[in-house]
Image: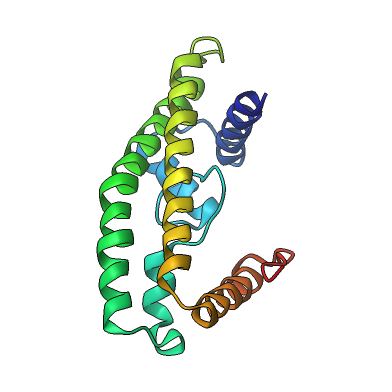
Length: 172
């Protein structure tokens, strides 16, 4: 059931992207519309929106007061894994999303025609989400309790500032 919902949402986003324009469908325009709509560096929409650790840690290093050992552990245990395991999959997911979008709009492919691609996209997004979860759990082990609590506060503030979403109760 989750797979059907995710596939429906992905196609819904693609439909919304194209709704405001007459049918002028080149890849560059689709990419620009997806970037504008999502406001993200990557075109791919995430299965579960989790914070991106590198940006979070770099922009808050003075607040967190990380020591040399913590910086080294984050570099070797988190950032290298993210770069090797997640970023390559993000590119594949972006290509699959673009392929599905183009197939729907240019070739009027049905969900049955795209089932294999949609299933592959779901599997890749699941792997990406698992990678983010592993990275966040590793971060919690590297930081002190006080540092991790500061990270949670920063995540809450970022959510409020950038997304206007209801805050999660991350302290409980």
